[in-house]
Length: 311
Image (cartoon, rainbow, N blue to C red; front, side):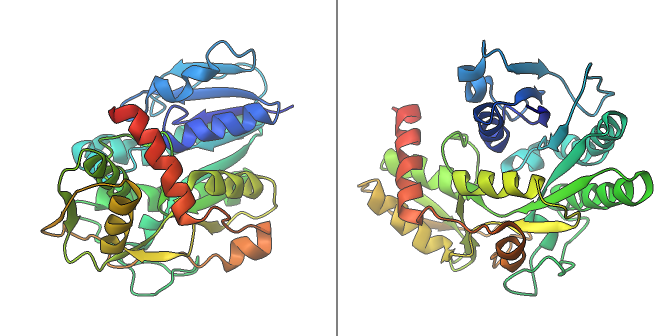
């Protein structure tokens, strides 16, 4: 049995990680300040003898009594609507929060895993994106608060590994979807599903020809779990290389919702990536991992979750 600290533990991905470790028989301490997370995501774990929730901002000094074996740092606003609304908090949790959690891992001699993002590649000039691509990021653009926070977090993580010998892992997460995404998340899939379930116009930004590669949450969690237990310290892409245009994704969701919605087009936001597709060669080799849930199956599960939330 391990003792695991998960920051952002009430968020979309963090809550699924809590479930995975609890199912594994481990003790989980979830920390979240709930500015974008929700206690509803972990309500089913309250009262579990191996689960503890701490409502706290980890950009401050964080003390955990007793042993800690793993620190998984998933705290951060993660959708454009959030980090455009919370730019300072996004930068702080990527810098100060990462520093505090690396300090905790160093103090406890715990293994540390950083949740990084495909956004470190920016609007990529290389396609698909391998881990050795350095990216094309606008550091002073609106999205730069998230992109650069994560790039700094990666640099800090590697510095702690090299200088303090902290046992670190870095996962670069590509677009992920599934139950527990927020209805007002602002990202394409929650927006499309919510609009389609209400038979409202489905909003596509730009021409809709920009692409995304979407990974169902169960597959992502399995990849992260495997990464934690291999001896590899540099970034690893985890995502689904099955690429689809935003327009085709909108059409597919309308069809799966049996919706009467029509598609409308709006102006593309600043620095919105034109393509996004992970090169997962390293994950296949290192982790013997690749996604298994077909897109239509994953979308149907997600639609059912949203249907239960929107009524």
